[in-house]
Image (cartoon, rainbow, N blue to C red; front, side):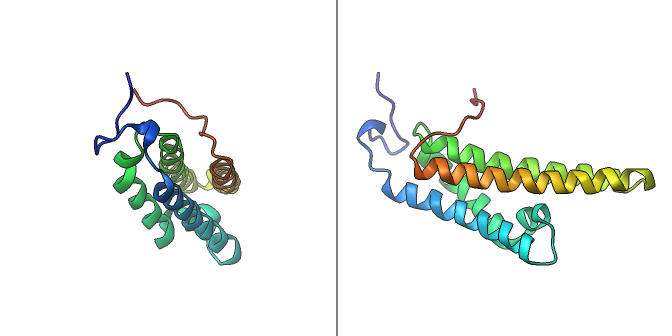
Length: 141
């Protein structure tokens, strides 16, 4: 039985051109936030979570999520959304660690590690999009 998009068109015959372009734009917004964190005074993770480009990217993810559901782009949207929320989680964990004097070094290591993880997630996701491959993330059931 074929799968259908929310607008009723079969997913196999649907043109995803505009949605692919949108997904590139979202990765571009995230990449801009990462580069702002590298070049500016903010951390990568701080820029990724708190900058306007990244927030706009996540809003676009949620806004167009139903349009990509059931397509290979769905995994990219989930990848991008999960990257944002896990980055926020790492910031909260870092702040909690930094509240104690002994936890400050661990918080700094966590912030640096999370920054590298974000760079990896944006680069790997965008690379897979260019190759028209899905992202390896757990299914939402």
